[in-house]
Each structure stands twice: as structure tokens, then as C-alpha cells.
Length: 411
Image 1: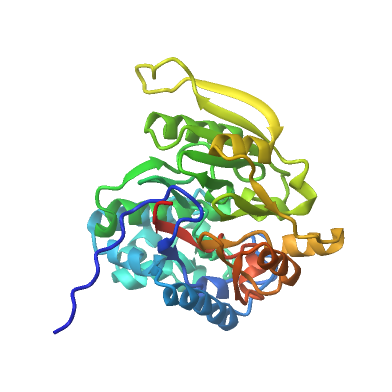
Image 2: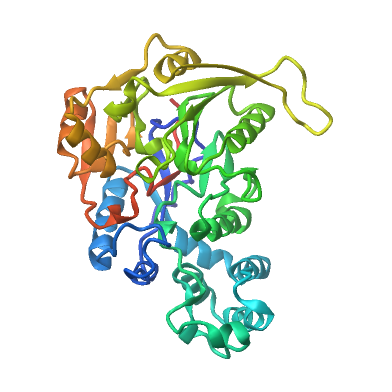
């Protein structure tokens, strides 16, 4: 007799290193085949990846997770399942054609085309996009003047990086507000999955895409009750403040550290320069280890006003590692000293050497190519699971970027 399937782990996470139980991934597919030298910059890729190799690398990444007992959920499968619900179909089709480039006639034609698709086909089209020549019944001035190679519905190659469009803080999920136009629709897909899929029934949404820019790659759960938010190219100070007010109002955290980072592509998110690898340790880009600062934000003494707005107290700046240790209630936050010369450090940071995914304390996944960083992690007592990423990394993201923890065990 077959054994009953195990109950899903409770939703939520309170740290970066609690044992990973369930994770949301997106296996790259046809959307990556849309990338060309003509459009890859606009779609935020630094090159045109070899898609079969990228898929093989991603499959190996997922296999490493499942072999260690992690449940892997896939965006496209969840999306196809929610598109069986009329409300979700309407929301996502409306979002897909809500584009001022199209004009009224082309919007109607595109919406009708999408509405005729079966759930799995619609999910694939919402992710891979809809090209001019693929649209049945296209019409209107915008359609006639559009280049044959242009997209009526643009593809979403960055959906691969599931960390950015949502992040769980405690048992609530923040559907984020992505800064770059090429990524806006990712949040609508993520929001629909959390709102309509039975797996997430009852989950409260902490944030939404209509608010100030905030991206999941900038949010680190340093310890239960302590959240660090990077402010730079993608997340704004207003987004960090809004998140702070909301986590305080809902009792999900007692301290938020706001951490300015350089506004450039190489350091687009906080997790491109630092990630947690143990309950009291992180790996950090050496060039910023001594200069990174934080403002410490806590709830003020006054109760929330009639609109639920929480008063804030802001202190700082002070060195990030000192502010973090104080907020976490520990004597010292260990920084893994990679011992890199400046050129190697810059190369490995660009190749996501600091962007690791912890599966448990002292167990992390990293790209194999960052040999010096990985050796330093192991010398510090961190077990490193090495994965290939020569093609996956062309969108500037590592193992942490490619994974959104849905469930982590409490520390």
C-alpha cells in the first residue's frame, strides 16, 4: 500500500540559514530563446545564453536541492494551475496587454488571442512572450507599424531569478515592486500564484507591486526579527521604509537595517555582495567589507495612527557588521575573509561568488567557477555544494538569486 504524501512544510521563513524545506524555482525555457544581441541589454542579460546548457545547469541545481530533501516548486507549473481559474486568467491577460505601445485595437486582438489558449499554453506564452508574427488576428495602427521581430507581449527571461519578485518574512509574503520595466510583469505572475493557488491559501501578502520599488535580492533575513534591506540600483529608500513600517506593524521583525550599496549593475542587490552562510557568519565582497554601513530602524514609541502607520526611530550610520551583530544579539558577526587579491575579488564578485544559497547552517550552494571564494568558505567550516553556472550567470544572478525559499525550518 502506498504511503500518504507528507504534509507540506509550514509557509514562511525567519532566517537565511534555517533548514530549507520548500523552494520556488523557474526552469529557463523558451523565454531565453527570445534573447538576441539586438535585445539582450533591454532584457537585462549580458549575453545570449546557450539555452540547453542553461537548462541542464538548472536541472543539476534542482537535483542537488531535491537530493537533500528540499521540495522544489516550479513557477510555470503553478502558473498553469492558477490559470484554470477565470479570475486569475482575467488578471494576468489584462496585465499582459496593459502596455501603452499597443493601442486599443492591438490590445483587444492580443487579449482575444491569449483568452483562447489552454492554461498550460497561456502560461508558456505569458512567460515566453508573444511575437508580432505569432499573433492571430493582429490589427490596428500599432500592429501594422510594428517590426516583425518585435513583441506584442515581451518575454520574461529574468523570471529565472525567483528571489526578486517575492520574499517571505515570517509567515507573510512580500510580492515586490521591481524597478526595471523589463521585469514589471514578473510581479503580476507571482502575485497571482500566491493569491489563487490552493498551496498558498490563506497566506497574507505583506507588500505589493504598486508600492515603492523593493526587490527580494535586497532583503536578507539576518536572524529571527532582524531584516537587512539594501538600497541602491533597484530598491529605493522609500521601499525600505515601507517594508519596515509593515513588518513592525505586523510583528514580523523588531529591527530593519537599511544598507546603502553602489548604484551599479555589478552590485544591483545586497545579495550580490553579501549572503549568510551560518547563523553568525556571512560571505562578503572584500572591497566593501570595511566600508559598508547601515542605518538601524526600529518602531517608535508611539502606537500606530488611525491608518496603521507606525512611527519609526532611525539611528546611524554605523559599520554594517557592528549594527547587524547588535540587532541580532550576538557579540560578533563573522565575515568570511576570502583573502582575494583585488582583481580576483572583482572577477568572482561579478561571477556571483558572494551570491550563495544556504540549505542549512554551514551548508551552502555556490557556483563552481568561484574557486578562491569557495575554498575560503570551506576553510571557515562551510560545506560548499558546487554547481555549474556558465550559462545561468549571463543574467547576473547566482544560486540565491535563482531561488525563493517558501519554507525554512526555524533556527
